Length: 267
Image: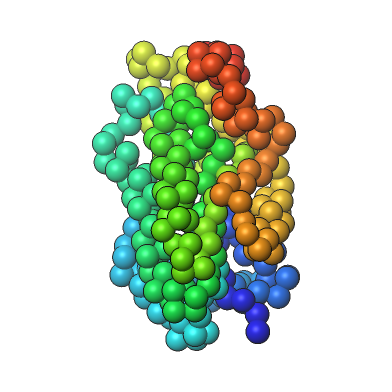
């Protein structure tokens, strides 16, 4: 019997690549988006789910359980980006990014845990970000949401160990997707004191995405994690320099690492 996978944010980008790759490996895959345009695509069955609305989360999980009787793997991938000088990002946008990137995944986890406990097994993979390991200029809120999810996963792993439910983080670097089009960008204002440096950083961020890795690598990485008996706490997927940056954060003095980031972003 094939394992049943629920993956949020599966209509495009990394989520779509992961979902379709798992279909080719024989998994029964349910993908979600806020407003699915089709009921199935390339073997992925689509359901409506908005991670910021608990009623849609419960409805989607209930629908899968009625059809399949189980959920073996949850991949929390739904999320959005946000950029801007923190001073100029409206408070409602800061709250919104946490609702989607942090509280959203927690809602879905809470919805599947009762069934996973009943099954006495389950796997939750939270898609975080290499940006969650460090505070990045003009991406402060995004880094904060992904860092918070990563730390919460560390704690939840220990809480759920007795139920044979495994959790892990997989942190992608920059991938060639359409994520930039869905970001909230604080307006680049000509009279802003941040105009020069924010403008440079925006251009650099978009360039990194345009020249990013093939998203299928995330599908391969997730498949490898699923087939690991005891998954690690953290996985990183992306270009060598992005992965090594996490290592350097742990070994370099704080100010030295900060200088590396300032030089990278030409600030």
